[in-house]
Image 1: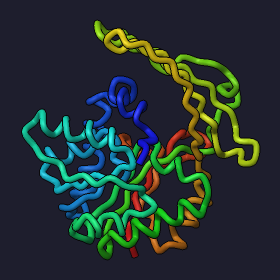
Image 2: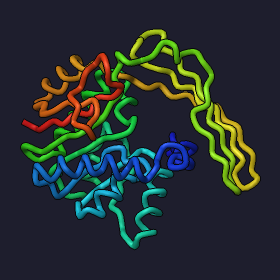
Image 3: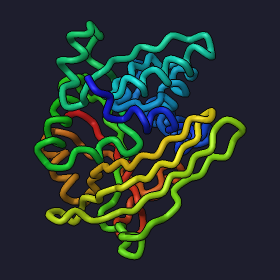
Image 4: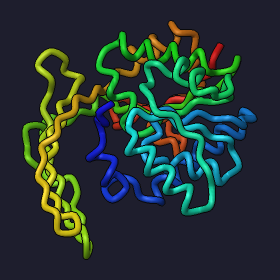
Length: 262
């Protein structure tokens, strides 16, 4: 299977994955998981495993699932550096239950969490509902589902159709510039087309790539209705989870939700 995120995985932590970010978010997750006496956790779309690693260091039994083999290789390396062995599964989150069963992973989990821009790849309600059904099937009764998505009401028009510098890296063996330009999808105003321009000099190997990803932003009330339809009870919705700020769609760019299986 072709890895859809091989390039992003290779440089993910250099660009987006600072250890401080993972530590801060993992402490928030720890407080939530501790409150509900969670031991076994599934990191859905675990990426390069920053949250997996931090929670494993806190004593949780964590399983990571991701669609990118390159991402999972990064997770293994992080755990190996600390003398730890991760439990990882390759697969699509829309098929979570069958993938875990086939991999002989014990079910159910006490909690599932999904961070980063993972659910943003569920571009329509059908895909989102498929994923929620899978989360439901792998959670124990009263299990906790924690996730973060972007708020559609905070899409800034002044930041669209503009070429900008997302990130630069200047190290002895790696020089990288990531430029991007966001556009709205013609058929759905809540979907952004992220056009990423990669300029890379990695140990003398020059690379230039243009990568395009569609990312869905979410309307809170619509998202809440879908979750409730699937039997999830909304416990909390924060705009800033670290400060426990209740979500305000006119102010916060992200929605951090804590739900419980009914």
